[in-house]
Image (cartoon, rainbow, N blue to C red; front, top):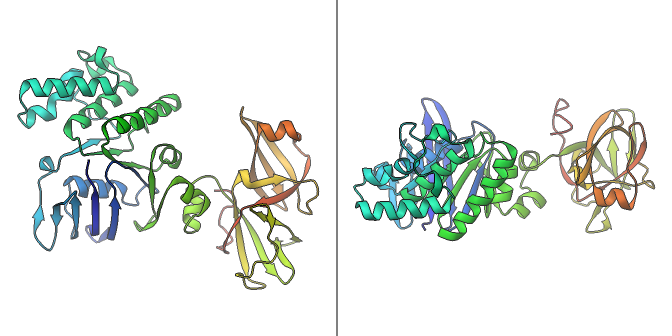
Amino acid sequence: MAQIKFDNITFRYGKKTILENFSLDIEESQIMGLVGPSGCGKTTLLRCLCGFVKPEQGEIFIGNTCVFSADRHINVAPEKRNIGVVFQDYAVWPHMTVLENITYPMRKRKVPKETMLKKAEFALKQVRMERYRNHLPSQLSGGQQQRVAIARALVSSDDIIVLDEPITNLDAKLREEMLVEIREIQKTIGTTIIYITHDQEAALQLCDKIAVMQPDGKLCQIGTDEDIILSPANRFVFTFIGVSNFIPVTKKKDGMYLDFENNCVKYQDFKNGTIQENISDFAEDKEYEMGIRPMDIVFDEKSAVKGKVISCTFLGNECTYFVDLYGKQLRVEQSTLDIINSREYQENDEVGLSFVNPKYYEREEKEAQNVQ
């Protein structure tokens, strides 16, 4: 197990800056999820850590060892950084058997044969691939090839494994299975894992902590899944992690109002079961947006805010509604239990709406989407 530290890393492709003064600490034996939109620099950061590319400035530490320093002219070779990597496309050798694929990194390091086979068998057991040791990759499913790639990473390093979009090419059921297996393997071995993805749901399910990167490569929040969901650092985090609605609002003397061109309706929002009508932090008559999760919009017949159901889709454990609110489309999610205790609404039904735990942001441009 090893702690990882990025200290003021800057990397450019030509004149394009990918990472600038980027710093991040990852605790040992932790699964750290690094999430952000495509092109924000997640994979570039991985390549800097592994030594595949060289930053312009900054330092990288693995444990107490500095593996890169621009100022001190340190740049440890990739094969000596003791990092196992699993790529999106698996990168298993098609002409080698499963066992040969797994032992390949150790053969390159000239590990004694007996030790090599013992470690390979242990890795095969961890990913439940013992019976396939003599199969070629062409005889395996996508999920099985992914297990081979993880086993190969396990024998490459007991300290650090980097997973770069490792389950993107798998179907939904296999993705769920692989996330569970990765977590179980990490619990057994205690390896530090960096999980790089743009799939925020997978990161929330798997990781101990999540670091969110903005499109410009800046790190905007680090926290547990609860921190990220309940206390987003800014509008980008609120938008990127999970489904969100944004509704135009204005603060007036007597409370908060929905602010549509032809409708200005006073509403109530609730925090911890308490009505919050007058929010002192907001300036009067200034334009804001209320960010609200679909599960935090409640059907409330007593509410003065009225919308009309556009569509309703039953998904087993919940219903997803799309509701027209004064020309804006909102996504609302209602659990099956709530439906049983109240009612299921149908297309064209009028519904009252209340809002629980909203977040408020200064109003963005008119062309911003209502449902992210």
